[in-house]
Image 1 (cartoon, helix red, strand yellow):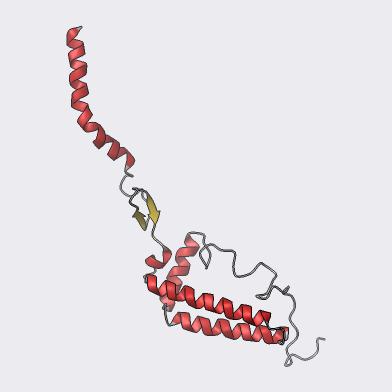
Image 2 (image 1 turned 60 degrees about the horizontal axis):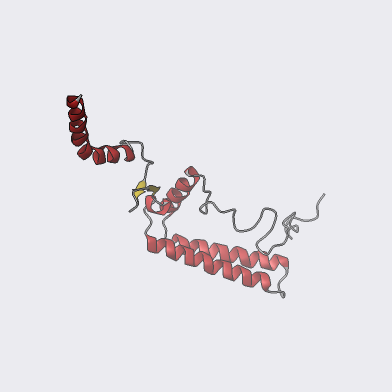
Length: 160
Protein backbone atom coordinates (compact mmCIF):
# COMPACT_ATOMS: atom_id res chain seq x y z
CA UNK A 1 0.00 0.00 0.00
CA UNK A 2 2.81 2.33 0.81
CA UNK A 3 4.41 1.70 -2.55
CA UNK A 4 1.20 2.70 -4.29
CA UNK A 5 1.10 6.03 -2.43
CA UNK A 6 4.72 6.72 -3.32
CA UNK A 7 4.02 5.98 -6.98
CA UNK A 8 1.08 8.41 -7.00
CA UNK A 9 3.14 11.14 -5.36
CA UNK A 10 5.98 10.56 -7.82
CA UNK A 11 3.61 10.78 -10.79
CA UNK A 12 2.06 13.91 -9.33
CA UNK A 13 5.45 15.62 -8.95
CA UNK A 14 6.45 14.63 -12.46
CA UNK A 15 3.26 15.99 -14.07
CA UNK A 16 3.00 19.31 -12.19
CA UNK A 17 5.73 21.05 -14.25
CA UNK A 18 4.08 19.79 -17.44
CA UNK A 19 0.59 21.14 -16.56
CA UNK A 20 1.26 24.76 -17.59
CA UNK A 21 2.62 23.54 -20.91
CA UNK A 22 -0.43 21.37 -21.48
CA UNK A 23 -2.75 24.22 -20.56
CA UNK A 24 -0.95 26.53 -22.98
CA UNK A 25 -1.19 23.97 -25.77
CA UNK A 26 -4.93 23.50 -25.16
CA UNK A 27 -5.74 27.24 -25.17
CA UNK A 28 -3.78 27.98 -28.34
CA UNK A 29 -5.63 27.30 -31.55
CA UNK A 30 -4.09 24.67 -33.78
CA UNK A 31 -2.19 25.89 -36.84
CA UNK A 32 -4.53 26.90 -39.63
CA UNK A 33 -7.65 27.21 -37.43
CA UNK A 34 -7.24 30.91 -36.59
CA UNK A 35 -9.31 33.21 -38.78
CA UNK A 36 -7.42 34.50 -41.78
CA UNK A 37 -5.95 37.99 -41.38
CA UNK A 38 -6.25 37.84 -37.62
CA UNK A 39 -4.28 39.81 -35.05
CA UNK A 40 -3.61 38.52 -31.55
CA UNK A 41 -4.40 41.11 -28.88
CA UNK A 42 -2.52 41.52 -25.61
CA UNK A 43 -5.20 39.45 -23.91
CA UNK A 44 -4.33 36.60 -26.27
CA UNK A 45 -7.60 36.77 -28.20
CA UNK A 46 -7.61 36.79 -31.97
CA UNK A 47 -9.38 39.59 -33.80
CA UNK A 48 -9.60 40.22 -37.48
CA UNK A 49 -7.29 42.67 -39.15
CA UNK A 50 -9.29 45.72 -40.34
CA UNK A 51 -10.25 45.68 -44.00
CA UNK A 52 -8.43 48.95 -44.63
CA UNK A 53 -5.16 47.32 -43.54
CA UNK A 54 -5.80 44.29 -45.74
CA UNK A 55 -6.46 46.66 -48.66
CA UNK A 56 -3.08 48.34 -48.07
CA UNK A 57 -4.53 51.68 -46.96
CA UNK A 58 -2.72 53.67 -44.28
CA UNK A 59 -4.48 54.76 -41.11
CA UNK A 60 -3.87 58.42 -41.97
CA UNK A 61 -5.50 57.92 -45.40
CA UNK A 62 -8.55 56.37 -43.73
CA UNK A 63 -8.73 59.28 -41.29
CA UNK A 64 -8.47 61.74 -44.18
CA UNK A 65 -11.22 59.88 -46.05
CA UNK A 66 -13.44 59.95 -42.95
CA UNK A 67 -12.81 63.69 -42.60
CA UNK A 68 -13.71 64.32 -46.25
CA UNK A 69 -16.91 62.32 -45.92
CA UNK A 70 -17.84 64.12 -42.68
CA UNK A 71 -17.28 67.46 -44.41
CA UNK A 72 -19.51 66.31 -47.28
CA UNK A 73 -22.27 65.35 -44.83
CA UNK A 74 -22.07 68.83 -43.26
CA UNK A 75 -22.29 70.46 -46.70
CA UNK A 76 -25.29 68.28 -47.65
CA UNK A 77 -27.01 69.21 -44.37
CA UNK A 78 -26.39 72.88 -45.16
CA UNK A 79 -27.99 72.44 -48.59
CA UNK A 80 -30.94 70.62 -47.03
CA UNK A 81 -31.47 73.48 -44.57
CA UNK A 82 -31.39 76.12 -47.33
CA UNK A 83 -35.06 77.00 -47.81
CA UNK A 84 -34.28 79.26 -50.77
CA UNK A 85 -33.48 76.22 -52.96
CA UNK A 86 -36.02 74.14 -54.82
CA UNK A 87 -35.90 70.35 -54.37
CA UNK A 88 -34.34 70.03 -57.83
CA UNK A 89 -31.64 72.59 -56.98
CA UNK A 90 -30.94 70.77 -53.73
CA UNK A 91 -30.54 67.46 -55.58
CA UNK A 92 -28.14 69.05 -58.07
CA UNK A 93 -26.02 70.70 -55.36
CA UNK A 94 -25.90 67.46 -53.38
CA UNK A 95 -24.90 65.55 -56.51
CA UNK A 96 -22.05 68.04 -57.01
CA UNK A 97 -20.94 67.67 -53.39
CA UNK A 98 -20.86 63.87 -53.72
CA UNK A 99 -18.97 64.08 -57.02
CA UNK A 100 -16.39 66.48 -55.56
CA UNK A 101 -15.97 64.33 -52.44
CA UNK A 102 -15.51 61.21 -54.55
CA UNK A 103 -12.73 62.95 -56.52
CA UNK A 104 -11.03 64.05 -53.29
CA UNK A 105 -11.26 60.54 -51.84
CA UNK A 106 -9.74 59.12 -55.03
CA UNK A 107 -6.75 61.39 -54.40
CA UNK A 108 -6.25 59.69 -51.03
CA UNK A 109 -7.17 56.06 -51.84
CA UNK A 110 -6.46 54.43 -55.18
CA UNK A 111 -9.29 52.71 -57.09
CA UNK A 112 -7.55 49.36 -56.46
CA UNK A 113 -7.46 50.01 -52.71
CA UNK A 114 -11.12 51.05 -52.76
CA UNK A 115 -12.05 47.84 -54.59
CA UNK A 116 -10.03 45.73 -52.15
CA UNK A 117 -11.70 47.50 -49.22
CA UNK A 118 -15.17 46.88 -50.66
CA UNK A 119 -14.37 43.23 -51.42
CA UNK A 120 -13.14 42.65 -47.86
CA UNK A 121 -16.21 44.31 -46.36
CA UNK A 122 -18.57 42.37 -48.62
CA UNK A 123 -16.83 39.14 -47.67
CA UNK A 124 -17.39 39.98 -44.01
CA UNK A 125 -20.99 40.98 -44.63
CA UNK A 126 -20.37 44.62 -43.74
CA UNK A 127 -21.54 46.24 -46.95
CA UNK A 128 -19.79 49.19 -48.50
CA UNK A 129 -19.55 51.36 -45.38
CA UNK A 130 -18.55 49.00 -42.62
CA UNK A 131 -21.90 47.43 -41.86
CA UNK A 132 -24.05 50.53 -41.50
CA UNK A 133 -27.52 50.90 -42.95
CA UNK A 134 -26.46 53.53 -45.44
CA UNK A 135 -26.57 57.29 -45.37
CA UNK A 136 -30.35 57.59 -45.05
CA UNK A 137 -33.30 55.25 -44.57
CA UNK A 138 -34.75 53.43 -47.56
CA UNK A 139 -37.20 55.61 -49.47
CA UNK A 140 -35.82 58.88 -48.14
CA UNK A 141 -33.53 61.31 -49.89
CA UNK A 142 -30.56 63.01 -48.25
CA UNK A 143 -32.78 65.82 -46.91
CA UNK A 144 -35.36 63.42 -45.44
CA UNK A 145 -37.87 63.87 -48.24
CA UNK A 146 -39.58 60.81 -49.64
CA UNK A 147 -38.00 59.71 -52.88
CA UNK A 148 -40.27 58.76 -55.64
CA UNK A 149 -40.73 59.51 -59.28
CA UNK A 150 -38.64 62.53 -60.13
CA UNK A 151 -39.90 65.45 -62.07
CA UNK A 152 -39.50 64.80 -65.80
CA UNK A 153 -36.41 66.41 -67.23
CA UNK A 154 -36.99 69.30 -69.64
CA UNK A 155 -35.43 67.24 -72.45
CA UNK A 156 -37.86 64.35 -72.08
CA UNK A 157 -41.02 66.12 -73.16
CA UNK A 158 -44.55 65.30 -71.98
CA UNK A 159 -45.39 61.66 -71.12
CA UNK A 160 -47.44 59.83 -73.74
